[in-house]
Length: 300
Image 1 (cartoon, rainbow, N blue to C red):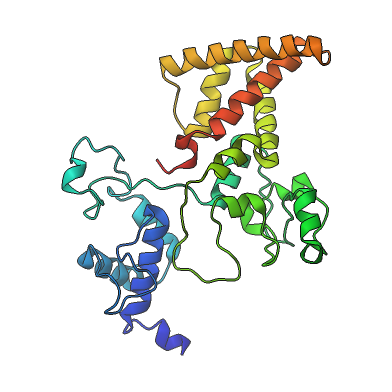
Image 2 (cartoon, rainbow, N blue to C red):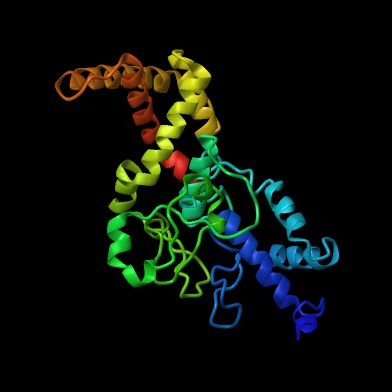
């Protein structure tokens, strides 16, 4: 049966795989019903391209998915801008003809890994037993039976890529669940991509995003010391892969000054805080803002 499924005379397997890989990179597949290639499904928007890629995967790439990824990522279609400068959106509102790169939000696990990569906390160790991401005590107590065996949080281990995170059907990790991670009890052809207030609240007030923002701030302060412009420039290059504009640089410089002064003012009433501690708190706030940017959370 395996030989029949992977046979060059069975074009369906290659077409389905190619469509899934295309969907992973572009948010939507060439066939927009990835679990139904039959009469009840939607026809491909680019039938000849789908057939060509499927034939190329089998005969030229010898079923190498790495080569398929490389081919798609190096294509002009993948490297197109999301802007509608060349082709008005009215002529292709649903982007069926690939007139621009489709905009879509990153997956929950990718957002997690991107945070760890930007602040240099990503533990690149491969293989081994699963990691146990942070889950607040209230959630654990409300799932006592499911939480049995959930190991104590170890930040170094939990900083490995999210693909190694332990998945329990009865105890989903709140951060992943908020950003539409697949439920492990279901098989779905495509993830949902919702936009909810809880996502913004999680990034602003959640334990994970705040902890990673503190690590990001520590790294920036270590690298840039008291050079504000250099600090903002480095934060943009690491998180957004670009330099800040002059307006962004000026506005964020003012934001850091105001936040630092505000922390010093509040420290006189609550507890003593040095200038360096106030500065670190202000940079942490800047990092929280960057993690909440639509540009950080969506494909560009």
